[in-house]
Image (cartoon, rainbow, N blue to C red; front, side, top):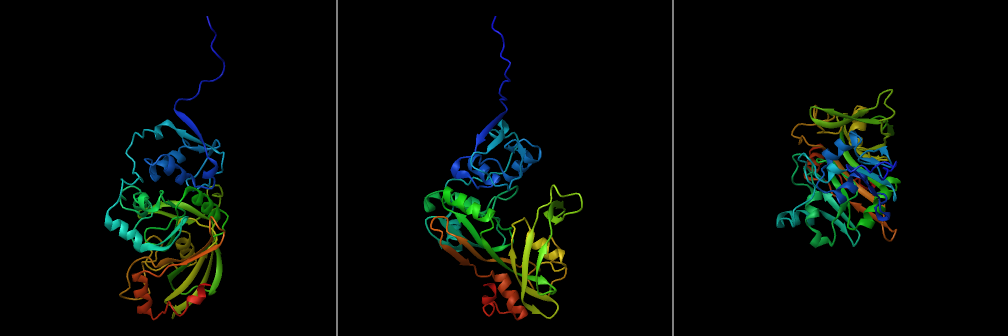
Length: 340
């Protein structure tokens, strides 16, 4: 009779996938969307929280950057999810209206890079209850772009402005490393409640994710939360002000945490006007203002992923912010030099 081998049998419920060379620098959640498009963001978060998905045998977060050669632990349930999850994979083709919608957003395009001016009120990615989003529309336009465009970073649903998209997998990896190494220069414009003092400064406050009745948000970390706190730094500068009621500020994030600018301005007592997650909608600076988030990704400067030359793109402000500027007597054209 043949003796049984002492070596352990492989676990049929788990597979290990190695990160390819051209996938180095991708975020973990974006890697998942490439390999398992049927797995939504919420479902992936659940797998990460329970430790079913790991990177190099360690627990990981959705926004972790991957290194070529890393080993990703993937449970077999991912192949055939037992629960319904939102899909980020768009159906073949999209409507002419959605195609025109994307075309109107384009600020810059070449063979490697696409830069959009994201409008107010549309999600960048899908999720529970979100069927129409920029990522999904782009996925249905492979015939237009020659490949599936890939998001390089994200903006909140109600944040407007510069959104960077890679047109090839190689460009996505290189641009991802640009953000990872903080080589991307980002400038946001916002209207905040009250006037910050000093008029120019730096906010350093680690953030922790927290849930609330109005959805996910972040808060300042507390003692003992070092393991889950996310270091975050923001530079701000007041461009103009309206008496003591409001200030037009330029914001330059050093890090790129979720809701970083919104949370940081609220922490120093000057929430962004119209921000319903961080008390910015409680006392609007003026009557007849749109109760909408007044935060705009104004400018982005990056090295081109192929040539290394500087790509410098500026996005015009959305209608609701232009109306507010007019209402408050602020002139966006007069202070464009302030963003330099």
